[in-house]
Image 1 (cartoon, rainbow, N blue to C red):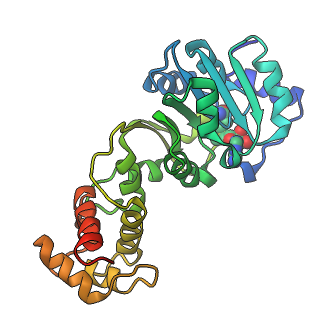
Image 2 (image 1 turned 90 degrees about the horizontal axis):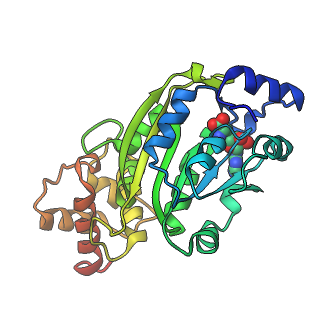
Length: 290
Ligand code: SAM
């Protein structure tokens, strides 16, 4: 099978199967071999690796993954793509194509079965309409993960990598950085895809922490606290926490905790590092017993 990352070969296979792009599935297929090589290189795939690919499309990147990995599982929601994948991946005996919604798949079970429970690598040109749910599902379902190397909307990549005090910093930055170290490895223009997306794209590598970088007693409480702090971005931390109906913290308890941390009462959530959020969460749980 000819390499697909070339526009002519992609068009030929799409025409052969009379394939129609489905917007609802976020289908923008890669047609640039340099970008494909860059993604696979950034993921540092070796012949020891089990790789999970989310949304293989017509199998363009899957071919590169099969060449480099020990074993690949490619999970595709669109059943119209399955016969195409059977043809484009026919030359590989180390790939397993699954027709499923990634958000409904037991990925921890897959890691257990195919990789003996050892950390897996995830590589994908993600469907942009569900980027954040997919990343959060991977993290929160405690799938053993070594790294996640993905193409995402540029703006989302910037948010994942952002630090305190910047406009892009928010709950997504903190969640990503709690679980991994984020590095944007390439910016990718719209003309590298078919059809062209209306937004810019970037490849980001998330190298997952095997040990959590901060000590936190109640992970769920930490993330509720973070969400409350960013819900009303322009409010002070004290007001953000005290006014959130979903958080059992009063305004005076918030003020007491901020005082105990030695911070100004006018501080905003966007100024706090992950470590400071963890300290605040632990203090509220232990000293104020919220
Ligand atoms: N990997 C291919 C490429 O780079 O050319 C296709 C990438 S395209 C941006 C996203 C792919 O994810 C599409 O093939 C789409 O059908 C698939 N997809 C969308 N939602 C999905 C889901 N919930 N589970 C699995 N695959 C999904």
